[in-house]
Length: 78
Image (cartoon, rainbow, N blue to C red; front, top):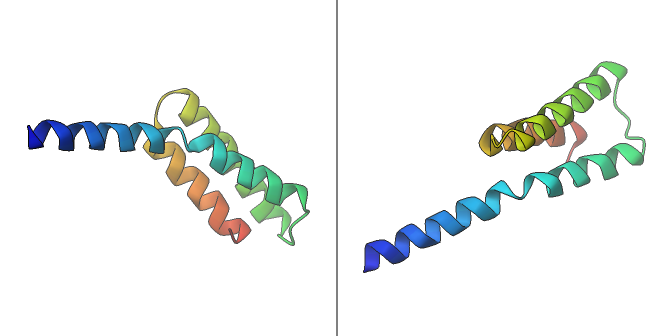
C-alpha cells in the first residue's frame, strides 16, 4: 500500500512539474518586455532558448523544455 501511495505522489508531482513550462515562458516573456540590458547576441540566445522550450513543451518533452527555459532564465538573471 505504501508503495502505491508513493508512486501516486511521484506521478502527480511529475505531472505538475511538466505543466510548469508555460509559467516559465511567461516569466521569460515578462522579463523580455522590460527591455533587459543584454547584448544582442545574448538576447537572440534567450529568444532561441525560449522558442526551443516552447516547442519541446508542445512535443511533450518537458524535462528538455525546462532545461532550455532554465538556461534562458539564467541569461536574463531570473
